[in-house]
Every structure is written in C-alpha cells, then in structure tokens.
Length: 217
Image: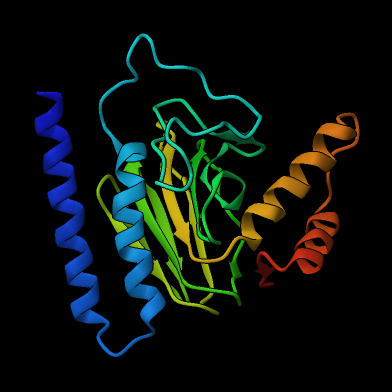
C-alpha cells in the first residue's frame, strides 16, 4: 500500500510538471530543470505516509546523506537541517547540490511569509498538507494538498496559513542557494540572542546582505 501511494504521487507530480512546462514553453531552461529536480528530490519529503517508527528525528545540524554525494543521495523521513520558523532544509550545497535547494516549511494558523520577491531565480512550491493561501501579484487563491505554485523570478508573492487549525506544510525548490543562507543567518541571530526578538529591520538587513529575498511593502 505504501509503495502504491508513492508511485501514485510520483505520477501526479510528473503530470503536473508536464502541465507547467506546456503552459510555459519558451521560458528559461532553468524552469524545466527546477520542475524535474523538485519531482526527483522532493517526492521523498512529500510522502503522505506517517514517519516509520525507526525514522530518525530531524536535527538542527546538516545531516550526512545516506548515499555518497558524487552519486546523489537519499534523505530519509525526519532528516534535514532544522532552522527557525518551521524550516527544514532538505537539500543545499552543504549536502552536495551544485546550487539548488529544497526546503520544507510548516506554517501554523495565522503564520506565513511577508510579501516578497526573489531576484536570483524562479521558485516552485508543492503543498504537502493543510490549507492556506497563495498570493501572486494582485491575486490571492486558496491552496491545498497536491497543489503546485510556480513563482517566476521577480514576482511578488506570499504563502500563508490564514484560517486553518491544521498546519500548512509546503516543500519549495529554487535553483540558487541564497535563500537558505538567509534562513541560516536569521537562525544564527535568533539562537545566539534568544532573549532579544529579531526585528523586521534586522531581517531586512540580513536579506539585503545575502540576497535571498526582498520584502515588498
């Protein structure tokens, strides 16, 4: 039953990727690479099955993948680099990629990102569980399990869980590493000074220094 669910999810992701590619023919080649990399790397993190009893818990350090980096790697359920704000880094240059990142993020009720954009690359989201909203430019739409959100470079967007008691869990992919470096810098600031909440101005300064994203007011 578990393998059947996995295969069905792979087929679903592949079908969605083809739909996105057909709709975006003529766009930059990195979009095509991003879609298929998200499918190949992200399926393991998108499983709807509960973690197995022997699955290792996620930790806040970069985990050594089960397979050698030269041949690729397999990241097991519960593995990853745990950071602030419900972020778990699943793949990044620290684990052997050539610049691409795959990140899982969980938003509680009322949680979400600020309106922002990325100048360094396109972004792809896959909704694993929960319900929320995705704002793309001037349009806001409800999102739920199985939905894919494509955000082009420089497009203003926001992802959030606004009305649901169930956490919204998404996986997102980018073909550039700056956003993960920004997450790590914020995590380091928050954990090094736990008694002093980080301000929006500090977040903006970190983002501007690293280039992960730019807030839109």
